[in-house]
Length: 246
Ligand SMILES: [Fe+2]
Image 1 (tube, helix red, strand yellow):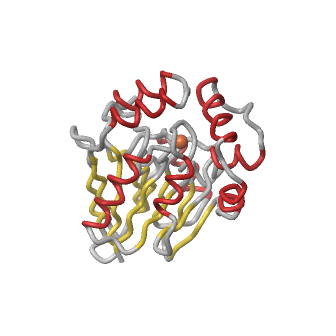
Image 2 (tube, helix red, strand yellow; image 1 turned 90 degrees about the horizontal axis):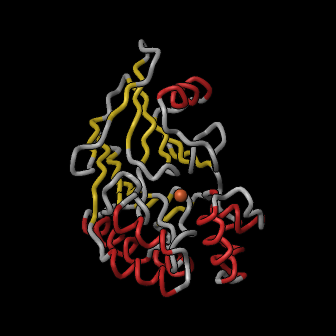
């Protein structure tokens, strides 16, 4: 099976379109979206429409949860302003849709969530110590997450105590030949708001037959998206950060 695994589209329609086309060219059979399809960007409903087909599975992120619960106080200023904007521009049928998304989903020998299994919506899996806790407390062969907007992976061999970090290449890509005796936590980065200094959209492909995970970077018209953010009256910092990939 060939899975496309992506996360944190954040209302960025242009990045979403580019990634969807890329995955279609690669002939993926199913797309798994690890939450935060909305928030920050100017096209939340359009991003859901873009991926709302039978071949796509959606997982809930903390931005969807904020819309469902109405609790916006947990966010920093720009995130709070953008979630309030999203709240105003989000119709009832979309609210019903996101309310049905699961926080954790198991498929065969892998598990998906937005942040980390310890706290699926909010946990930042961004250090080896935190990755270790997840490896210790949960049973899985592969766990795919997003939330940090920073692509990277952790692997743990049964004989090791501390997980190893698998870092991205200088061009922002990542290729992991998955080994039988190891377990993995893989962060697929962000489609619509990467924060690793590379503005290109992140896009993962998991080939279960060949046991290979690859993360690609996809170009998209970021200036167009930035202009939409400004035109919508969203904070200008949200436009400048996607141009710089921070
Ligand atoms: Fe996010």
